[in-house]
Image (cartoon, rainbow, N blue to C red; front, side, top):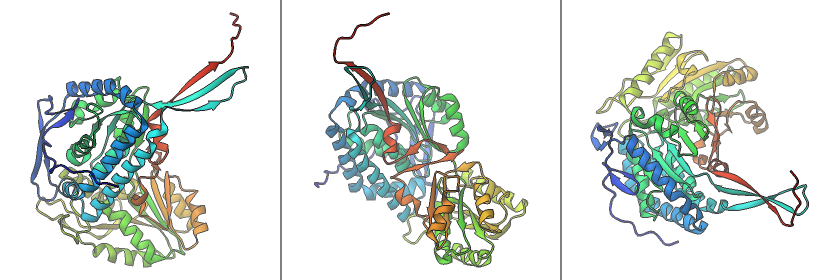
Length: 492
């Protein structure tokens, strides 16, 4: 496949694309975007206000219908070019992820692999609209058809922890399926969460007005993003409290909400401890634990509890933390000082609740936002077990037996991701099917590798499914058309 001729390094991230024009916002306030490790200012943006948002929605509405009528191959080709551009600009985007999101090199590489995969998959889905299937009719000479059409305008609100992927996994399929998108990235990651993607799609030939990016504060445009009459679908990834607020304010719209998690990882008495420890270290500390699918609680059968704890603490102690640009770094900085304070407060709260802090360390680095791995031993009721921590913190919990482990795992309001380790995969499957979660992994916590395929949550962890063919249902609608092929007498 021929490579796309890549332009020079992207610049101009002090502006945002609204109605096809890169410009500053009208909120009358600006925000600095800083490196969480060094504290260096990366960009400064004049924030968007409700006037900008209204213009973006208006342009999206005006341009979407013509885009949805374009041949599927036209839309698919834009996606394919975007995927090639992402590959060509991998080093450039990796640098932004390291500087803006505090991502280590392996973490950035994994995210960019997912981002390209989502874009390539979107190209394959472009022909899923403007198609129809037959529906049975009991009436003579009558034909029923159900057409799948683009939903219209999609509002996407994305988080800072996996900014490129968690924006693009909605943006790419929504555009490929004939929709227009207005994207609001997180304030901590405006470039990787939206502005860089907009440059990619612009270079790929996406018509102006189909993708606008509004960088603004929640207090200025947050409510308006979801309350506005234009969007037919609201796609949000973030915390459960914010998700509940969106559900209350959005009105009659399709909602795709991926919310918080409190992932349990269960280690049964017959588990391969070397494998289980490696999986638990990855699940708890990958990207500093700032992953909605992260392991929040490690629930270990009493028969192997002591041996597991010894190995797990040693493994956590050996993890290398520091500058995300260094090739050997495994944990980089927490995204901002507010998040760091929240993590440390939860650790202190768990100790007050009776947990034992067996591994700790003070924050380090130029900004003081690199928190060393933390390990607590406690019950399911301590703060770090009850609440989503979203930091490099593991709480290890002793279970009496398999049934107790299942009870502990399900004793949470969340239901996003989960895992179980056992040498008996049939036993693992039986256990997995009893766990209350959108995803359960048996002997495998490298769940991020498959995040482009399918994902979703249960209970307070969200509504809807992301990825795979499920995303087609999220961003399309159905139109029933009946055809009477022969004259029929009507009586009133």
